[in-house]
Length: 309
Image (tube, rainbow, N blue to C red; front, side, top):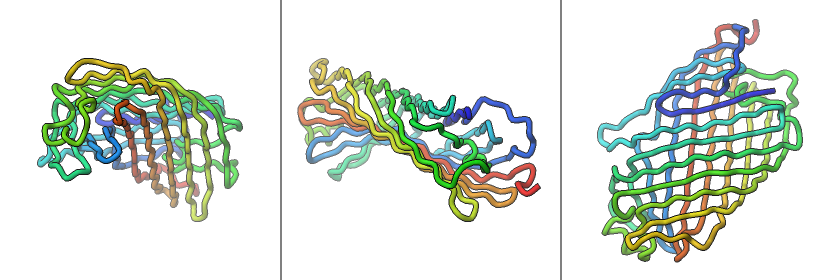
Protein backbone atom coordinates (compact mmCIF):
# COMPACT_ATOMS: atom_id res chain seq x y z
CA UNK A 1 0.00 0.00 0.00
CA UNK A 2 1.40 3.39 -0.99
CA UNK A 3 0.67 6.47 1.07
CA UNK A 4 2.20 9.91 1.45
CA UNK A 5 1.51 12.63 4.00
CA UNK A 6 2.85 16.16 3.95
CA UNK A 7 2.02 18.99 6.35
CA UNK A 8 2.77 22.59 5.33
CA UNK A 9 1.96 25.44 7.69
CA UNK A 10 0.56 28.65 6.14
CA UNK A 11 0.20 27.18 2.65
CA UNK A 12 -1.21 23.65 2.49
CA UNK A 13 -1.05 20.18 3.99
CA UNK A 14 -0.88 17.33 1.45
CA UNK A 15 -0.98 13.83 2.93
CA UNK A 16 -0.93 11.95 -0.40
CA UNK A 17 -0.68 12.55 -4.12
CA UNK A 18 -2.98 9.71 -5.23
CA UNK A 19 -6.54 9.95 -6.57
CA UNK A 20 -9.59 8.16 -5.14
CA UNK A 21 -12.61 8.01 -7.48
CA UNK A 22 -15.02 6.49 -4.93
CA UNK A 23 -17.31 9.19 -3.50
CA UNK A 24 -17.95 6.99 -0.42
CA UNK A 25 -14.43 7.71 0.77
CA UNK A 26 -14.58 11.53 0.64
CA UNK A 27 -15.08 13.87 3.57
CA UNK A 28 -14.83 17.52 4.55
CA UNK A 29 -12.80 18.36 7.65
CA UNK A 30 -12.03 21.18 10.05
CA UNK A 31 -8.82 21.09 12.05
CA UNK A 32 -6.54 22.91 14.43
CA UNK A 33 -2.80 22.34 14.55
CA UNK A 34 0.30 23.23 16.53
CA UNK A 35 3.78 23.42 14.98
CA UNK A 36 7.07 24.59 16.44
CA UNK A 37 10.79 24.55 15.72
CA UNK A 38 12.49 25.45 18.98
CA UNK A 39 16.09 25.08 20.12
CA UNK A 40 18.21 25.65 23.21
CA UNK A 41 21.76 26.16 24.45
CA UNK A 42 22.55 24.77 27.89
CA UNK A 43 25.32 23.85 30.32
CA UNK A 44 25.22 21.83 33.52
CA UNK A 45 23.22 24.50 35.39
CA UNK A 46 21.48 26.85 32.96
CA UNK A 47 19.42 26.73 29.79
CA UNK A 48 18.58 29.42 27.21
CA UNK A 49 15.58 28.47 25.04
CA UNK A 50 14.41 30.04 21.78
CA UNK A 51 10.74 29.51 21.02
CA UNK A 52 8.70 30.78 18.01
CA UNK A 53 5.43 32.69 18.38
CA UNK A 54 2.07 32.05 16.60
CA UNK A 55 2.48 28.30 16.74
CA UNK A 56 -1.25 27.50 16.42
CA UNK A 57 -3.31 27.31 13.25
CA UNK A 58 -6.86 26.68 12.02
CA UNK A 59 -7.92 25.28 8.70
CA UNK A 60 -10.29 23.39 6.44
CA UNK A 61 -9.66 20.46 4.14
CA UNK A 62 -10.92 17.52 2.11
CA UNK A 63 -9.90 13.88 2.53
CA UNK A 64 -10.31 10.41 1.10
CA UNK A 65 -8.52 7.10 1.61
CA UNK A 66 -5.60 8.18 -0.57
CA UNK A 67 -5.28 11.94 -0.17
CA UNK A 68 -5.72 14.61 2.50
CA UNK A 69 -5.42 18.28 1.52
CA UNK A 70 -5.57 20.73 4.44
CA UNK A 71 -5.16 24.49 4.12
CA UNK A 72 -4.04 26.08 7.39
CA UNK A 73 -3.82 29.68 8.57
CA UNK A 74 -1.75 30.80 11.53
CA UNK A 75 -3.51 32.30 14.54
CA UNK A 76 -1.65 35.54 15.24
CA UNK A 77 -1.77 37.15 18.66
CA UNK A 78 -2.04 40.92 18.36
CA UNK A 79 -0.16 41.26 21.65
CA UNK A 80 2.84 39.22 20.48
CA UNK A 81 5.43 39.77 17.77
CA UNK A 82 5.08 37.55 14.71
CA UNK A 83 7.37 34.67 13.81
CA UNK A 84 7.72 34.39 10.04
CA UNK A 85 7.97 30.78 8.95
CA UNK A 86 7.60 28.02 6.41
CA UNK A 87 7.03 24.59 7.95
CA UNK A 88 6.76 21.40 5.86
CA UNK A 89 6.67 17.96 7.50
CA UNK A 90 5.68 14.70 5.85
CA UNK A 91 5.72 10.90 5.84
CA UNK A 92 5.54 8.44 2.96
CA UNK A 93 5.27 4.64 2.99
CA UNK A 94 5.95 2.91 -0.33
CA UNK A 95 6.17 -0.72 -1.40
CA UNK A 96 4.95 -1.74 2.09
CA UNK A 97 8.35 -1.74 3.82
CA UNK A 98 9.93 1.63 3.11
CA UNK A 99 9.05 4.38 5.60
CA UNK A 100 10.41 7.88 4.85
CA UNK A 101 9.95 11.02 6.92
CA UNK A 102 11.06 14.49 5.79
CA UNK A 103 10.95 18.01 7.19
CA UNK A 104 11.83 21.47 5.86
CA UNK A 105 11.55 24.42 8.25
CA UNK A 106 12.60 28.08 8.12
CA UNK A 107 11.73 30.32 11.09
CA UNK A 108 12.59 34.00 11.68
CA UNK A 109 11.80 35.62 15.02
CA UNK A 110 12.05 33.80 18.36
CA UNK A 111 11.21 34.57 21.97
CA UNK A 112 14.36 34.05 24.06
CA UNK A 113 13.50 32.35 27.37
CA UNK A 114 15.58 30.86 30.17
CA UNK A 115 15.44 28.89 33.42
CA UNK A 116 17.21 31.50 35.57
CA UNK A 117 14.44 34.12 35.90
CA UNK A 118 15.77 36.69 33.43
CA UNK A 119 13.03 38.46 31.39
CA UNK A 120 11.95 36.92 28.07
CA UNK A 121 12.85 38.94 24.97
CA UNK A 122 11.61 38.63 21.37
CA UNK A 123 14.49 38.48 18.88
CA UNK A 124 13.34 39.39 15.37
CA UNK A 125 16.90 38.99 14.05
CA UNK A 126 17.16 35.33 15.06
CA UNK A 127 16.70 32.84 12.24
CA UNK A 128 16.62 29.03 12.15
CA UNK A 129 16.73 26.66 9.15
CA UNK A 130 16.39 22.87 9.45
CA UNK A 131 15.76 20.13 6.91
CA UNK A 132 16.31 16.40 6.88
CA UNK A 133 15.19 12.91 5.87
CA UNK A 134 14.70 9.74 7.94
CA UNK A 135 14.46 6.37 6.17
CA UNK A 136 13.40 3.10 7.82
CA UNK A 137 13.23 -0.37 6.27
CA UNK A 138 10.67 -2.42 8.23
CA UNK A 139 11.01 -6.15 8.90
CA UNK A 140 7.34 -6.77 7.95
CA UNK A 141 4.97 -5.23 5.43
CA UNK A 142 3.31 -2.12 6.82
CA UNK A 143 -0.29 -3.00 5.99
CA UNK A 144 -1.95 0.06 7.50
CA UNK A 145 -2.18 3.66 6.36
CA UNK A 146 -1.92 6.80 8.45
CA UNK A 147 -4.14 8.41 5.82
CA UNK A 148 -6.91 5.98 6.78
CA UNK A 149 -6.64 6.95 10.43
CA UNK A 150 -6.53 10.67 9.62
CA UNK A 151 -9.41 10.44 7.12
CA UNK A 152 -11.63 8.35 9.40
CA UNK A 153 -11.60 5.23 7.22
CA UNK A 154 -10.99 1.68 8.46
CA UNK A 155 -9.39 -1.32 6.77
CA UNK A 156 -11.41 -4.48 7.51
CA UNK A 157 -8.49 -6.74 6.62
CA UNK A 158 -6.28 -5.30 9.36
CA UNK A 159 -5.66 -7.36 12.44
CA UNK A 160 -6.48 -5.82 15.78
CA UNK A 161 -2.81 -5.44 16.65
CA UNK A 162 0.08 -4.94 14.22
CA UNK A 163 3.66 -4.37 15.45
CA UNK A 164 6.91 -4.35 13.51
CA UNK A 165 10.42 -2.92 13.72
CA UNK A 166 13.07 -1.76 11.31
CA UNK A 167 16.50 -0.24 10.70
CA UNK A 168 17.49 2.72 8.58
CA UNK A 169 19.46 5.89 7.95
CA UNK A 170 19.00 9.62 8.45
CA UNK A 171 20.62 12.82 7.25
CA UNK A 172 20.00 16.51 7.85
CA UNK A 173 21.17 20.12 7.92
CA UNK A 174 20.68 22.55 10.80
CA UNK A 175 21.44 26.28 11.03
CA UNK A 176 20.74 29.33 13.17
CA UNK A 177 22.09 32.89 13.12
CA UNK A 178 21.53 36.35 14.58
CA UNK A 179 22.92 39.86 14.04
CA UNK A 180 24.79 39.61 17.32
CA UNK A 181 25.12 36.91 19.96
CA UNK A 182 22.03 34.78 20.55
CA UNK A 183 22.58 35.55 24.25
CA UNK A 184 21.72 39.00 25.57
CA UNK A 185 23.75 41.09 28.03
CA UNK A 186 21.57 39.80 30.88
CA UNK A 187 21.83 36.12 29.94
CA UNK A 188 25.43 35.69 28.73
CA UNK A 189 26.75 35.98 32.30
CA UNK A 190 25.31 32.50 32.96
CA UNK A 191 27.44 30.93 30.22
CA UNK A 192 31.06 30.90 29.15
CA UNK A 193 32.46 32.98 26.28
CA UNK A 194 32.16 30.10 23.80
CA UNK A 195 28.35 30.22 24.15
CA UNK A 196 28.27 33.78 22.74
CA UNK A 197 27.33 32.32 19.34
CA UNK A 198 26.35 34.40 16.30
CA UNK A 199 26.01 31.58 13.77
CA UNK A 200 25.88 27.80 13.76
CA UNK A 201 25.59 25.26 10.95
CA UNK A 202 25.79 21.50 11.00
CA UNK A 203 25.47 18.58 8.59
CA UNK A 204 24.76 15.10 9.94
CA UNK A 205 24.29 11.49 8.84
CA UNK A 206 23.66 8.40 10.92
CA UNK A 207 21.76 5.20 11.61
CA UNK A 208 18.42 4.63 13.33
CA UNK A 209 16.15 1.86 14.52
CA UNK A 210 12.37 1.89 14.61
CA UNK A 211 9.24 0.52 16.20
CA UNK A 212 5.89 0.94 14.38
CA UNK A 213 2.50 -0.26 15.61
CA UNK A 214 -1.21 -0.08 14.80
CA UNK A 215 -4.10 -1.03 17.10
CA UNK A 216 -7.83 -1.51 16.65
CA UNK A 217 -9.48 -0.55 19.93
CA UNK A 218 -13.10 -0.91 21.08
CA UNK A 219 -15.82 1.61 20.13
CA UNK A 220 -14.47 2.27 16.61
CA UNK A 221 -11.19 3.70 17.91
CA UNK A 222 -7.88 3.12 16.11
CA UNK A 223 -4.40 4.04 17.33
CA UNK A 224 -0.82 4.10 16.03
CA UNK A 225 2.54 4.53 17.77
CA UNK A 226 5.99 5.10 16.20
CA UNK A 227 9.30 5.24 18.07
CA UNK A 228 12.63 5.85 16.25
CA UNK A 229 15.92 6.50 18.10
CA UNK A 230 19.16 7.10 16.23
CA UNK A 231 22.76 8.30 16.42
CA UNK A 232 25.15 9.80 13.92
CA UNK A 233 28.16 11.96 13.15
CA UNK A 234 27.82 15.70 12.65
CA UNK A 235 30.16 18.27 11.13
CA UNK A 236 29.58 21.58 12.94
CA UNK A 237 30.90 25.09 12.40
CA UNK A 238 30.28 27.80 15.00
CA UNK A 239 30.93 31.53 14.73
CA UNK A 240 31.18 33.49 17.98
CA UNK A 241 32.36 36.99 18.86
CA UNK A 242 36.03 36.06 18.35
CA UNK A 243 35.84 34.00 15.15
CA UNK A 244 34.90 30.51 13.93
CA UNK A 245 35.71 27.05 15.20
CA UNK A 246 34.71 23.41 14.66
CA UNK A 247 33.62 21.48 17.79
CA UNK A 248 35.62 18.31 18.47
CA UNK A 249 32.62 16.23 19.60
CA UNK A 250 30.98 14.90 16.39
CA UNK A 251 28.22 12.76 17.92
CA UNK A 252 24.52 13.58 17.49
CA UNK A 253 21.68 11.68 19.16
CA UNK A 254 18.06 11.79 18.04
CA UNK A 255 14.66 10.48 19.08
CA UNK A 256 11.54 10.71 16.91
CA UNK A 257 8.11 9.50 17.97
CA UNK A 258 4.52 9.82 16.77
CA UNK A 259 1.20 8.81 18.31
CA UNK A 260 -2.23 8.96 16.70
CA UNK A 261 -5.83 8.25 17.63
CA UNK A 262 -8.89 7.99 15.40
CA UNK A 263 -12.61 7.67 16.22
CA UNK A 264 -15.49 6.90 13.84
CA UNK A 265 -19.24 7.41 14.27
CA UNK A 266 -21.51 7.03 11.24
CA UNK A 267 -20.62 9.98 8.95
CA UNK A 268 -18.36 11.69 11.48
CA UNK A 269 -14.79 11.04 12.57
CA UNK A 270 -12.15 12.62 14.80
CA UNK A 271 -8.39 12.16 14.44
CA UNK A 272 -5.62 13.37 16.74
CA UNK A 273 -1.91 13.04 15.92
CA UNK A 274 1.18 14.24 17.77
CA UNK A 275 4.81 13.91 16.67
CA UNK A 276 8.06 15.12 18.14
CA UNK A 277 11.64 15.04 16.89
CA UNK A 278 14.44 15.66 19.40
CA UNK A 279 18.06 16.17 18.27
CA UNK A 280 20.95 16.84 20.66
CA UNK A 281 24.72 17.38 20.21
CA UNK A 282 27.71 18.93 22.00
CA UNK A 283 29.25 22.32 21.17
CA UNK A 284 32.35 21.65 23.36
CA UNK A 285 33.35 23.86 26.31
CA UNK A 286 30.45 22.53 28.44
CA UNK A 287 27.85 23.86 25.96
CA UNK A 288 25.15 21.55 24.59
CA UNK A 289 22.63 22.16 21.83
CA UNK A 290 19.12 20.72 21.46
CA UNK A 291 16.63 21.01 18.57
CA UNK A 292 12.98 20.11 19.10
CA UNK A 293 10.49 19.72 16.19
CA UNK A 294 6.85 19.43 17.26
CA UNK A 295 3.69 18.87 15.22
CA UNK A 296 0.16 18.17 16.54
CA UNK A 297 -3.21 18.15 14.75
CA UNK A 298 -6.83 17.63 15.78
CA UNK A 299 -9.31 17.14 12.91
CA UNK A 300 -13.10 16.67 12.81
CA UNK A 301 -14.51 15.30 9.56
CA UNK A 302 -17.89 14.71 7.90
CA UNK A 303 -18.18 12.02 5.21
CA UNK A 304 -20.23 12.56 2.06
CA UNK A 305 -21.79 9.14 2.60
CA UNK A 306 -22.32 7.08 5.74
CA UNK A 307 -20.02 4.15 6.54
CA UNK A 308 -23.19 2.06 6.97
CA UNK A 309 -24.47 2.65 3.43
